Image (cartoon, rainbow, N blue to C red):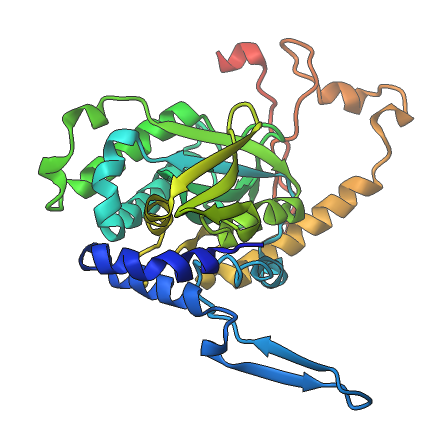
Length: 375
């Protein structure tokens, strides 16, 4: 099987001789690392059977974050370290995509644009969620930036894994989101566009950005992805996936590389063949700047909030166990208490929106507003 290292070892020196002056230090370092990965150049260990003549040589890996050989097993290690982020509530995957007109500017200035895109998308998301008209609570968010399409074109976007709910301003009350809905994506897209516009206005890039970028509709996607554990497994490949895995490379012959990709709309397999130089160029487009943080945590998931997150998780687990102990809705006939949980205006059952924290004295009864009273 041919690997990315094989392609770089065969065609990398010629590519650097021609284009080396235009490559970043991170791109050159990644090329050298991938070329030497699992070769004698990095050394290794020799293992010998004590009962025979069998000898095994294990080469060292380069450990570069863009190397497809080194990132295969990293996802499982990352999952084991993320247990503190698990909350016993449904989770969502929210994706922000940078518009096409901004990508040509973002590519040579990734450290500036992608960093601001990260911070402004997180800030916009938190601001919208904390609005009482939407969720009314602070979110927990872990995000990862990805820059490629399946055929290696430059397409920067950020995936956020978010539990379905938020912590109210009192720091104790959990505001529950619907299992299939978290926030409205249209106002979220407008808000992140405005925040990134304000952020880039303070940079030297502002004059080169077409004005039409700030008038077009931006794309934000929000979809449920199951429980917290399921969602983390869903996100892990995004954290450690590189632009092209070795198993997608089908061959290299006559100076051309053939690789497999999947059509995003039809899900059908595509076979693409590119000159080795064009193939290397596409891959190097996704080498992140040196020091750029690819995975970031915000809100309830930030490092400084881990103790509060542990208390919240214990509270939610306790509430969930209490709910599991309750009899099913049809275990008893309707009672006056059941009628109290119906809207006096329309007669429909009232939906549990949030759970109040335990207090020293039980709160007094509050009147239930009907649909007619709300309007």
